Length: 255
Image 1 (tube, rainbow, N blue to C red):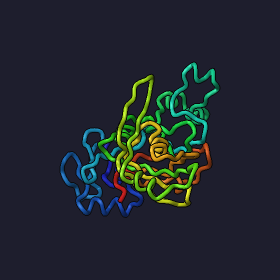
Image 2 (image 1 turned 90 degrees about the horizontal axis):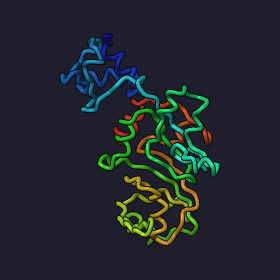
Image 3 (image 1 turned 45 degrees about the horizontal axis):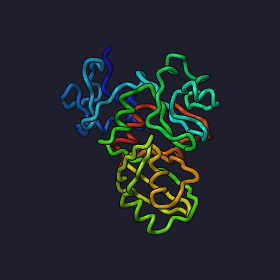
């Protein structure tokens, strides 16, 4: 199946307009099978010839399904165990059961995890490669959170969070420790903090505030890099399909 280059690029969802597609081609940003192609109507078989935009592979969007979910409180980001079922726990995957076919439903995974009490932006996908690209520590992907705290956050607490704090985790009598990486911290209200981190360790934001002598009462993920929940018209528990190209543009080519 041969496609014209401009048709292929439009179908990836990476570019927000046909004008952007044309400029990418004219600027020499597109390679097909390793060679720069500046001809818009160039024909090729996308199954056999890889297309790169500034070195990043672009693909047609129909191979995987990805959703952007406004995660509600009280849902786990995993399939339920028998014990969790007996405790009447709920899984984010249940929110999709009525809306996707069984094959897609069985393959859905979350891109990283938000703990049960945390709300906000969560990507849910059948694309394991996307999960790796976003969650891999070597990619330094920034996650933005809003934390409401028990006490007002002092300037010294802010400074500690910005510089990195020592976190100690005790599990079955074994203590492990790590130092959080420097974070971006903005005080919205005395007890409301916007925090940007490049890590995603278990319960990390909550543990960072505990380490400075405070406590997170409510945690909400606002976004991942340039992908912001507020740009999508979603209520708690709602989700919408999102194209791989849009994710790539907003997360990997943001800023």
